[in-house]
Image 1 (cartoon, rainbow over the protein chains, first blue to last red):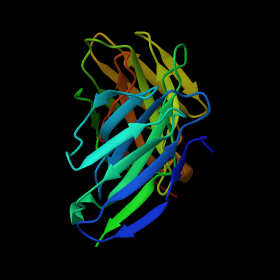
Image 2 (cartoon, chains in turn red, green):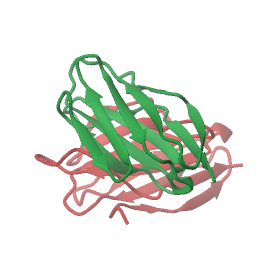
Image 3 (spheres, rainbow over the protein chains, first blue to last red):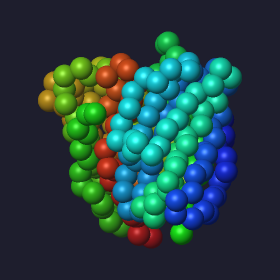
Amino acid sequence: DSGVTQTPKHLITATGQRVTLRCSPRSGDLSVYWYQQSLDQGLQFLIQYYNGEERAKGNILERFSAQQFPDLHSELNLSSLELGDSALYFCASSGAGASTGELFFGEGSRLTVL
Amino acid sequence: ILNVEQSPQSLHVQEGDSTNFTCSFPSSNFYALHWYRWETAKSPEALFVMTLNGDEKKKGRISATLNTKEGYSYLYIKGSQPEDSATYLCNMDTGRRALTFGSGTRLQVQP
């Protein structure tokens, strides 16, 4: 158990809809990362937050947005969903300061868009 | 976004074979390199973090080396076992924490 919690584990929805994925980082971790894994693809970096502020942005679509709340949990919002958005979305967290910087991953949220 | 490359993309070996694969990364702005193991239907787990040129790390039958000057790291598995079957990912950290993963090497060990 990595200590990172993601909900929901599975989600099925229709094109055009909007969903929110939630992530609770390990206790004490300030950084949260979101990654997308589409079929037969590697981990694509979407966005990183550090202590509530956006730190880095990857290839995140404009239809997607994220935020990190004061209690450090994060939400990834996916809107106007398309079939191609079907993927496994991972959240990861890492510690601040002197930690080794390794990422601790949640179990992922599998999104299916029909 | 950094260009981190891994090779080969996939590897099939027999139980007992030793194997190795490569992670290449830009040598500028290097802070640390991370290796992860990602088993099917699970989430990636950290294997090693390497920071110094010439670093060697070992965990059981798995070891890794690092060359920051030429921008590569090798991961070795000695005497592969079926339970080693997984995708092995590397990730370069510039100090702003690791963002970009290589596409991974998918290892399949046949009993």
